[in-house]
Image 1 (cartoon, helix red, strand yellow):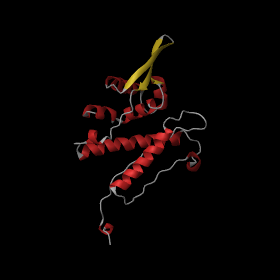
Image 2 (cartoon, rainbow, N blue to C red; image 1 turned 30 degrees about the vertical axis):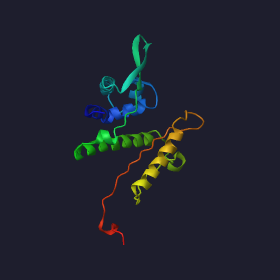
Image 3 (spheres, rainbow, N blue to C red; image 1 turned 45 degrees about the vertical axis):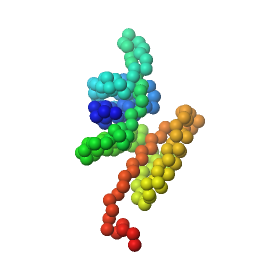
Image 4 (tube, rainbow, N blue to C red; image 1 turned 90 degrees about the vertical axis):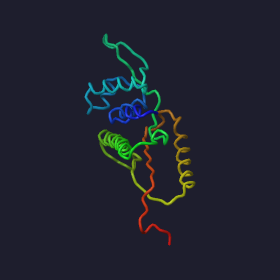
Length: 184
């Protein structure tokens, strides 16, 4: 993935649009309804950029009250955290991309709160936490493999049968060593 594609993806509004289109096919009207804080003119502009960049497609067009309505679909869910794609980025660029990632998470959580009359984190299976653990590279690879296996087992599930569409975000990075971290 080249730098211009990464820059195209990493915009907060485009990330939100791609997140919506990753769930289902939508019209501009439906995207606008899902993003009420984003002006329609901005949505049209971002859709055009995503189309030109080859990240979304027009799945179908239909006439509605004599006007052609387009239905958009995400072509391929972009992965911008591939190590090869991120190689050579400056610290500032890494921080900018991470900030957009966090912004997208924040919008998602805010949407959950806005559309949930009574927040019951236990019943909704919502949570967020951090943990610091010591692990070798091999031990950490085992954790990553197990997590990927568990998520891949859920990936083919269709909607229905009591299933709720859920988002999971995983962040992993080494922590700097502190003076008390040395082995005894």
